[in-house]
Amino acid sequence: MTTFLRLGVTEDDQALADAVATFAQAELAPRAQALDEQELSATCHVPQLAELGVMGLNLPEHLGGPGVTPTAMLLALVEISKACAATSSMVGAHYLGTDAVLIGGNAAQQQAWLPRAASGEWLAGFALTEPRGGSHPADLRTRAVREGGHYRLDGVKHFISNAAEAKFLVVFARTDPDAGARGVSAFVVDTKTPGISFSSHEKLMGIRGAHAFEVSFDGVMVPEDCRLGEEGTGFKTAMKVLDNSRLDVAATSLGIAEAALAAAVQWANDRQIGGEALASKQGIQWMLADMKLRLEAAWGLTLQATALRTAGQVFTRQSAMAKLYASEMVGFVTDAALQIHGGYGFTREMPLERYARDARILRIYEGSSEIQRTIIARAVLG
Ligand SMILES: Cc1cc2nc3c(=O)[nH]c(=O)nc-3n(C[C@H](O)[C@H](O)[C@H](O)COP(=O)(O)OP(=O)(O)OC[C@H]3O[C@@H](n4cnc5c(N)ncnc54)[C@H](O)[C@@H]3O)c2cc1C
Image (cartoon, rainbow, N blue to C red; front, side, top):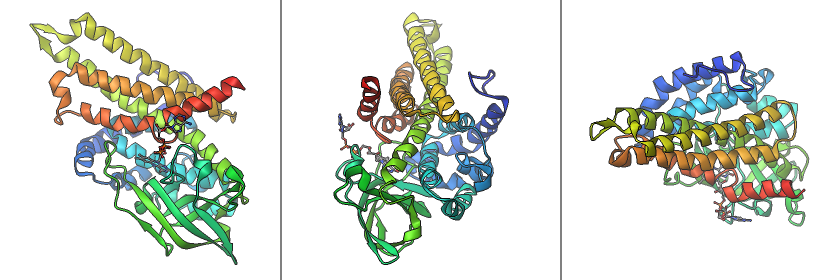
C-alpha cells in the first residue's frame, strides 16, 4: 500500500485508493488469471465495484456518483489495474459511455441514464469506431436519418467494449452526409432496441476479460429525445470524452507497470544466481532503475494532466502526452520485468506474460500512439 502522498493527492483521494486496493487485491487479483485464460467477462465484478462507488466515479453526487476528484478516480483505476487490467478496461469503457451522457446530454437525459449506471444496475458503452478505421472517426458512415419523432440508425460499429453486455451505448452517427465532423451526432441507445445485433466477442491478445464486439444497426428507431445535444455536436462530445478517457488508459498503464515492477523487484531479491541474489548484479539494478524512472515520469505527466482537468482547464495535449508516454512506458516495464524473471516469466504460471499482453492494447485504443503524437504535434505547432 502507498505510504506517501503523491503531488496533488489529498488524504481523501488516498483513502479511496486504499479501500479500492484492499478490495482489488482480495477479490480481483485471485480471479485475473481465470478471466484471462477462460475469457470470462470482467462484468462479474460489477456489483462489488458498484458497492465501492467505482461504477460512478466519474459522476457527481446528484447523478448517483460518489462525487470524488479526478485524482481519486485515477488512483482507484491504478489499484484496479494492478490486480486485473481487464476489469479496469471494462470499467473504463463504462465511463466512456456515461461520460458521453454527462458531457453531451441535458439534465433529463442525465437523470434518465446515469444514476442506474452508477449503481451498477446498467452497464454502458461507447460506439465510435467503425470497420473502415478508428483513427479517423470524423469519416464515420453510420447514418442517422430523421423519421417523424425518431432517427433511423443504420451502420456497423467495430471493437465496441461491453456492447452486448451493456444496457445502453452512446452511438455516434452521421446526421449530415456532407458536413464532415460537424455532421456527426450522438445518441444514447438502449441495446434491446429492435434492429441491433452483436457479434460474439472478439478473440483478443490481452485484457481478455474485457469483451469487445461488432455491433450492427439495421433500421434501429431511436426517439428524438435520445439525441445528446444539438445535431452536429456529437464529434465534439466524443473528443471531450476521449480527453478524459486517455487518463483512464494512463491509469491502467501505471497500474500494470506498478505490478510488474513490484514482481521484478521481489524476483530479483529472491532469485539466487551462482550463490548471489540477482538484485546484486549491476545490469539488473540498472534495468530496475530505468523501469522506476519511466514509471515515475509517467506518474508525473498523468498527475499534471489530472490537475488541469480538476481545475477545469483544457487538457487535450496533456492528456495525449500522459496516455502516449504511460502506454509506451508500460510496454517497456512489462518486457523488462519478464526478462528479469527469465524463463519463468515466459510461463503462464506467472502473471508477467499476461501483464505484457494486457499492456499492448494501451498503445492502440482511445487513439493510437501515432494519433497521440499527431495531437501533440498540432499543439506544438500551434
Ligand atoms: C480491445 C479493443 C477495445 C476497443 N474498444 C472500443 C470502444 O469501446 N469504443 C470504440 O469506439 N472503439 C473501441 N476500440 C477501437 C479502437 O479505438 C481502434 O482500434 C483504434 O482507434 C485504432 O483504430 P483501427 O483499429 O481502425 O486502426 P486504423 O485506424 O486502421 O489504424 C491502423 C494503424 O495506422 C496508424 N495510423 C492511422 N492513421 C494514422 C496517421 N494519420 N498517421 C500515422 N499513423 C496512422 C494507427 O496508429 C494504427 O497503428 C477498441 C479496440 C480494441 C482492439
